[in-house]
Amino acid sequence: MYDEIAQDLQQMRFAAGDVPYAEIVRRIAVRRERNGVQAGHARPARTTVYDAFRIGRTRVNPHLVGEIAGALGASDLEVAQWEARCLLARKNPPAAPIAVPEPDPPTPQPAVVETQTPAKSRKLMLILACIGLNVLGFTVVAMLGLPLYFDMIGTAVAAIALGPWAGVAVGLSTNAIGLAITDSSSIAFGLVNIVGALVWGYGARRLRLCQTLPRYLLLNVLVALSCSVIASTLLVLLFNGGTGHASESTTRNLTAMGNPLSVAVLGSNVFHSLADKLLTGFVALGVLSAVRRGMEVPFYDTLSADTMLHLKAAGSPLLDAGHDSRPAPARLKVRTARLLPRKGRPKPVAELP
Image (tube, rainbow, N blue to C red; front, side, top):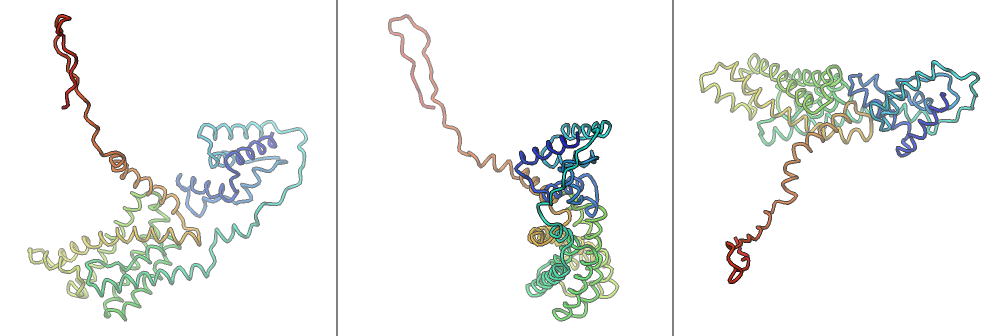
């Protein structure tokens, strides 16, 4: 019975478009992450998935077979039927199973290992690129005097793609380089970059706040609030409320309204940081779409798909209205005169509105 299951599963794979085994592994991982499994444990071994299609087996994993069927397009009911079929085969094993030589996997295993674990050189190149992104944003803001910060795009990308401590390395490097662009105050605010990297990294990996667009927005809001608390404390204790940043005009306005310096600094920082971190989050999402071409980025597939769904849902009324916004042509009104005797009865008259 296991041979029949394997053959039927193979036919289902061909009917779905000869889906590669690596693609089946990826789809299963995406489904598991949606169900709450951590990214590091969501991806099954490719050889394990391949073995499910092999005849000559003496046992199979019913749950894995159901996941494969789901990845190939089966409904929830069909998935349950596949699992029940495997359980039935386990209860009624064949009397003498026929051993069949195992065919070689269609693609070599090292390619999968490289996909799962990017080379160190790629990680190093990404970290350097993230530092460059931060320095570029830092420089543009300093030159143009913008009321934003824009110095943590690379921190967000590194923390989400490589982990929180990679983001910390990017952030500290950025602030060290910032000494040559502005003044010595840059190094003090390295703590802000550290906090942002840890919240982005652990929020994505431990709290799974990169699964959907609303959660991703919440993650960026948490980063903004955390960074604001640290930055405001540093500004009040070390710099008497300001360092000459363009956003401090809001602080002066709040102080002129009678607010204490600490409240004015915190209020101004929260306002500008929310705008900055939400914008940073969306730019980082675009950068991650380019990064995933060279290495695997956890959570990106589910987050990107959910973001597209929200964008389509938000834009659907406009698309519907844009289909045909011209008013429908007015119909001719036909008015019939009151019935008269046959002699002299007028014909219906067509009038324009």
